[in-house]
Image (cartoon, rainbow, N blue to C red; front, side, top):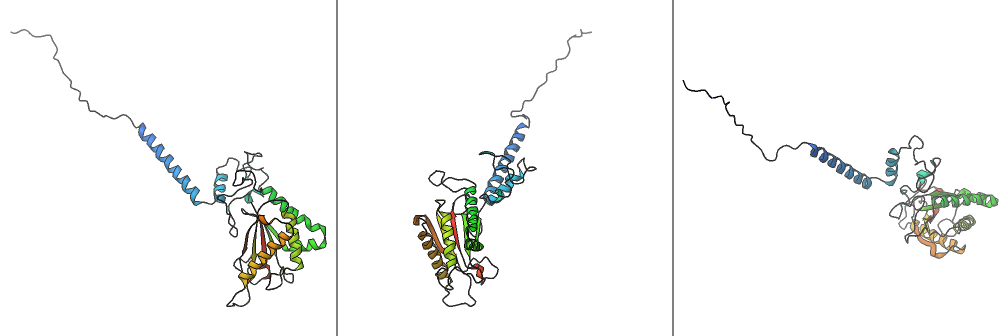
Length: 277
């Protein structure tokens, strides 16, 4: 009988190594974050291009943490904090977007303060525009004539500047019908506007508007009348001491932009004088 061996059998295990094995899924999370960030970036760029400045201000207010305090203000009171929390009545008019009638000629709305094209702080501010409008109203207490003249003045602040609208009423025209000859009322109004305009050095734009006629004429005089009245207003302002170099634009709009629902209403006879930003 042969001798038995005490040695255990030797078992050889062969391990197969595959190059490029699994290294975890952390890169997938990083890639997903990157894609999400890029999507947010392109969404932001699209919104900046597809929305108006008024809408962008609304979006900024939506994400502002001070919404419970004030719907339209940052709540601060300084150069970096925005307007006061009590400025909700004035902030929506603070250079946000252009009006339909007078679109801004600037690349961006200047807002409450701005700088001139040469880099200096030469543009009129919102507070100065409001002060001029208030000064124009205050002149009405000087005499009964001035008080009556104020019935023919409306002011509004737009991106373009302070619009001073002089308009006619039934029985109280600004010009003799069909001509550019001013009435005594128009002379008083121009004198009043000139005295206020001399408070600042901003450029001036003038636009003439007339009402439509009751019949359609082959040679409609509305274009000539509006242009001639705007030019006459320019000459009257210059005659009151306004520097001619400040005149930047004199235009006639004919009857194309009525402010009254009836295109033949006397209210559509008007001259708009703009103190440009």
